[in-house]
Length: 457
Image (cartoon, rainbow, N blue to C red; front, side, top):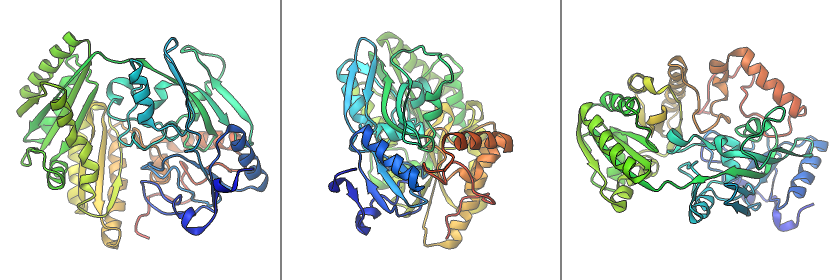
């Protein structure tokens, strides 16, 4: 079925596919590496016949546990189906296999004067297939949306081992049920993506960025709302709180204001004249909301320097303690200041190291809890805090996930957002597609009696 060099079954080899970037370790019984759609079909048909669980995975960068082989079985590693088949300038599309690295697609599109906006922080190592499965986002989500907004067609292998094609090459396609967005974000529970047709857009002609420094986190939240309600739609708008700023400076000093309560980074893009006007107006609005300092990048080098702070946050905070729990609870933009306040209360109530950064312009905050898995008491407090973070987001009209997906980490809280009927409707869709529960079991849906994530056992 597959050559021997693409089937790994020793303990050390399997261990490499037992974890992702979230939490927990689950050994698959075997890891296989298909290189064609036909090989995926053969693997799935065998698994379906023998009732063997199959967990598709790409680069393993998921923060929600989507590619964890919780039930053992087959880890279906898609990284060798990595051909960028075509960039079609006339139709503004790219046709790719799932193992293409996201940043490689972005580079190839830019070389053609085009733009693929979805830009998860892991883009240098994450695969397009994983991005599609988890419906990834990134800083550009504020202006350009998330991955699902750029997928117009798919080739998918069903849980029965059949090949279906959804959508196509046209931007408009309203024929029957729209299965493309159902597959995107389904986390490998409904089918295995073997090819994707992605929408590209013209590359913006200019871009400019600024950093605004605040003495009060709540003021920074109000400034974010102020920019958006004054007719400016930034390409990116990110926030770092004081613990994030200090972590970056301790990790790699770059001259950040360590006494500030928060900084926000804003980037606008588009026509050069519009970019100049909008960045100046954004700076003026930040000052109006009591920014004590605003730094506007005067050239591309300074722009890249401003963004270094954001890029360094994740590696920096892992220096504090060894265990990082990354959440992406998202609230409506107008609720950002209130969510900041709720997060402060949760941090103090549970005495945890809670760091907040993220895509504040679209309400997609990243509360990160830094802990030590060896400290059982601390991990139990973290479990309680995670539940309260999601409760706060939902109570403020938000959602469990803005871009990371549900996986294993958020499954216990699904009913909190969807209600029992909404969750049951999703279960019925899964049952209709995959009655034998072959594909990526124990994901998205909570198990009976599961009401919170367990990190302390």
